[in-house]
Image (cartoon, rainbow, N blue to C red; front, side, top):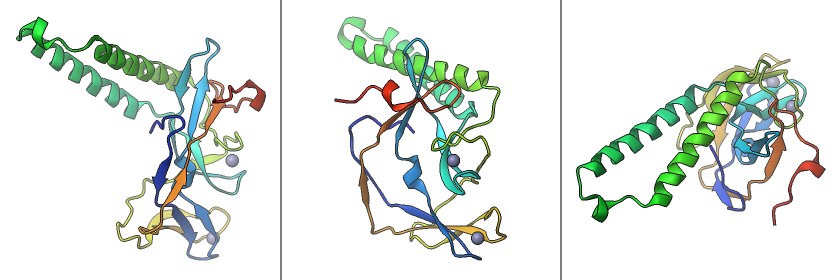
Length: 201
Ligand SMILES: [Zn+2]
Ligand SMILES: [Zn+2]
């Protein structure tokens, strides 16, 4: 999920609640944000993130997703789409139906970003980090299929340090507005200090 800078997003906030100690933890709110890797060349790549558990934060957190499988699929799909439309164009009158150059350039740019992110993910030899505190003592939460009525769903995830299970729920009628904030990390997933971040105008 890549969110554009400055654009407000609205979402139904979700919650994870333990059925034993009744402690509750934020869910998807952690995933609204725009973390980026800033490479030494100045190139910025989107951090792939998922909801996890951080032992240091003692709660839910957005953690890095370093599995390149999803992006590899995205890259393959994009290439296939481009090849299909390019070969389709060859059969037509090129002058009349030429795909705008800017369109191809933006596809190229998307593919370049995907390819660079895959290289970064596969070159990482350490574990994913918590995007809040940087700890590598994290676990990914199982993927959750939300009940559309908002009824709690058992994630099967055991509340660490307790033995209860975390249940996922959300209020379908409630919306929160948020402006995703850019947060910079180095290629190893360590948060860069604030003075190294450019301040969005
Ligand atoms: Zn508990
Ligand atoms: Zn943490």
